[in-house]
Image 1: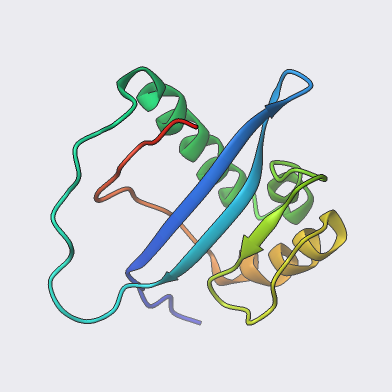
Image 2: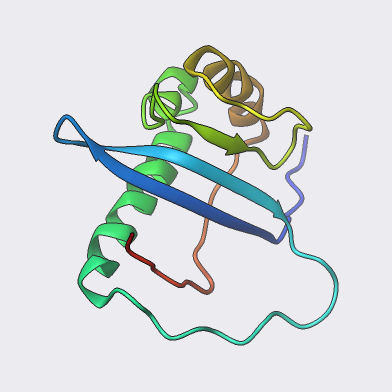
Length: 120
C-alpha cells in the first residue's frame, strides 16, 4: 500500500515522571483546509531543545514499527490522548499500545513544519 501524506497538527504535553520524560497528553488532527495560522513566537525558549529532542524520540520510536516502544513514551498516569486515526479517547497504557499496533502499520513519519513550545 502506498502512503499518502496527510498534513496534521499535533500537540503533546510531556511531564518528567520519576526522572523520565513521558507523554501525558497527545492530540492530533488533520489540518483543515485554508491557510495555516501564523506562527506564534516561542514562549519557552529554554524548553525548545527539549521539545525538539522529545519529538525526535517519538518519531524515531515510530520508525521502529514497535508499538510497545512507542507506547512506552506515554505516561501510565494522567494520560489524555486523542489520536489522529481513531475516534477513541485513550486514557491508559493498554489502549495506547493497541492503538499504535495498527498505527505503525501505516508507516508514519513526522516532520515539524511549524511549532510553538510552551512550558507549564
